[in-house]
Length: 544
Image 1 (cartoon, helix red, strand yellow):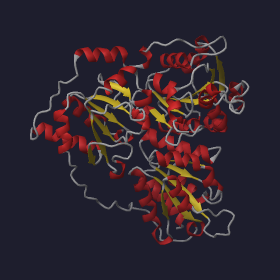
Image 2 (cartoon, rainbow, N blue to C red; image 1 turned 60 degrees about the vertical axis):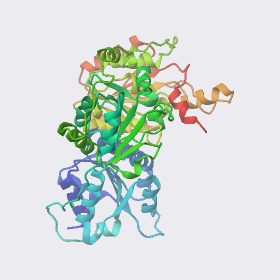
Image 3 (tube, helix red, strand yellow; image 1 turned 135 degrees about the vertical axis):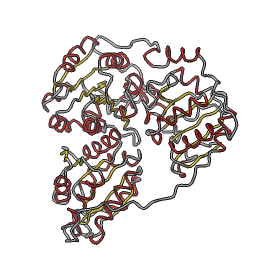
Image 4 (cartoon, helix red, strand yellow; image 1 turned 120 degrees about the vertical axis):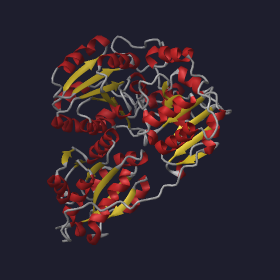
């Protein structure tokens, strides 16, 4: 049996069921080995799109994503999507063929490339192929993006036939998390707030019970939007996307516990959201993440769910004193959250015009129109706050936020991966016109997949962040503004249904599309007003 076949079988045996990519000579055999084992291959139009598909699939499914690319340019074409995944700690394995001869046209320094973008690097050896492939998959499952080097000469080497069992996981003895300082902080608090991040996505149940036990309000970073959906004490996203009520309440907390969140500048509004008088606790499985973005008073190293359960166990055992669960969980506050806890309840002046629709009005109308069971995938750009703030999601798997690298153009392909992961839901890709034009080639893939996909383009005929940042100072804007383009016609050229929207009434065909088979993707080119900038992106320009 050849090494490439062993790698494919091992990855399938560990749970890989989908592999996204573009096949060339270097990854032909390993990809076919995965397919022969039972995995489904999703062919992308470009390796950059394939990387984002694998990323979106992994985030939405909660399992490891697989990316298969050609050696050399196949790897470099995927680099931006790979960087986004690594910075987001997406569980993903990149099958990266290696031309190891330095004089080869295909040679690149794969270990250095992986290190440069924050990914792990591992290499398959002919004599340990099953062990190496299994170790890469398990590393990804623990929350890493892993570049698995597959030297071309090694792939073709003959090794011992392999049919299982899976190479086992070496057991590790996890130390009992030290939660006494956290318990003391909870006992002393009257107005606690939990902010859950990416590292808490699987810990809704224990965190909810703990919040009930100590009277905490619940908030999330953007990466964990939807985690506490339906909970009466849920404030939605903290930071730049926070409602006025959420900002007010977090701003008066006396204890903030960050669960799997590093409290970056976005989540804390550059440190201005959390009051200086509040005690700040950070819980993270990665000790290197503790205090990385701001000083914290108490740190707890451990998996979020395990720490929450340990605290609950001590509370229930009554060994550490009494936690006052009264605090600010009053009927009056519950009513305020019901009445003012969503952006839909915050009044605004509509700034649409005769030929444009206000992006807030557009987003609110879509929220009413679309089914509750949805997956919302948001690209980067000036527009990104509108779908993030106005579109509800049913749970944490219903929101995919491609912002760790702040690259425009990843949202459409990420949405395709999310649609593969959850074909039972409508996938909504919210993109800007710049990001759409960059990634429109993957509409070919969208048509092939025939999955329910709605693409909404917030089209202001510009790179809006630059317009609103540099325009007020009188800088010329010709480099970042463009003539109006019929993006719906471009979508129809790829085989999608296309619709141009300038008013709420123009959205009526969306209802008809939703009632139909939805076999063809629908692309909505929404001509949005650009009279105002997004202050959350203005924050990104601080110091630039």
